[in-house]
Picture 1: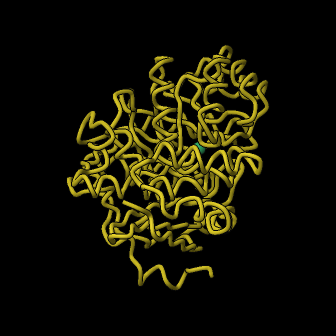
Picture 2: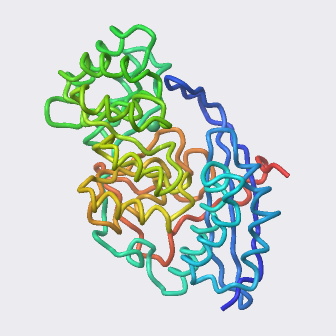
Picture 3: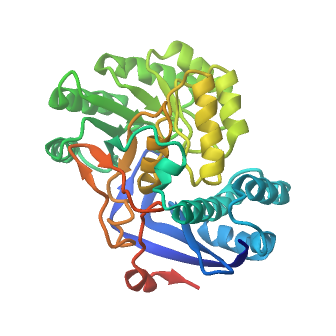
Length: 364
Ligand SMILES: [Mg+2]
């Protein structure tokens, strides 16, 4: 079995409404799609998305430097191909655009393998369970408290058991009031998850987390700049709230730096940021070695498979407003019922992109 073609397409898709966090304002989603095809016509599809920067650069990297490494290779050799591509691009960067470019290729190779095996992806990867919990995640800094509570209440009615909200407002008393109101609404047993999107210095983070600890958040995500494991170790030791990191980390070494610094309670690898499934599984195993749970970041259509494959996963993140079906990129909505995602039994990852709907957003 040999790879004959690698097709790459990029899209810039407007969101239905603007989404705001402590450090970002999102109006578009970039989507990069890669299809790998073998000489005998077998195919696999992979994708990554970005909040508005990076997909076009990743496409250029794939077309100029990565596709030539793949043509003629056996697509089942996912370890060999990942290492080869990563080593080839390492000078340009061991993460960032490099891993964003690797992710859709590696995902396409795994999809192809699963389709050839006639197995759903989660089972090919290990099959720890056939359904996973999802939590309701929202980029909701722009909502006033009334709208925030209405949003959480809506997700509660849909059966979700945990809810993530953005913190890091300029006025700390507003974060306290919002967390207090949400905790009151969801009651003592449902999960409250907080995300500061790297907003604070370590010292600020300690202070702000101490003010929020009484609402028993399950974690504070990215309290400070992701480039600073030592700062997070300080926060973790002082803040009184479990620390979750991973959204911005790009490979197993960056995660290992956090683990060995004692800087994280929960690891949140995103398959797009870390270069796809091959590297994501290594990070999940690193978490298992350190007795740390994995709470996958974003990419819910894919992380549902990954979380179902491993033994140490927590709920996957369903970010409202950014799902592939919500932005019009796929024909079939994600099947979430009472906060649970049942994995498809069809071969591969089962995600089918909506070609005609995407065409108007294509960037050539
Ligand atoms: Mg986040």
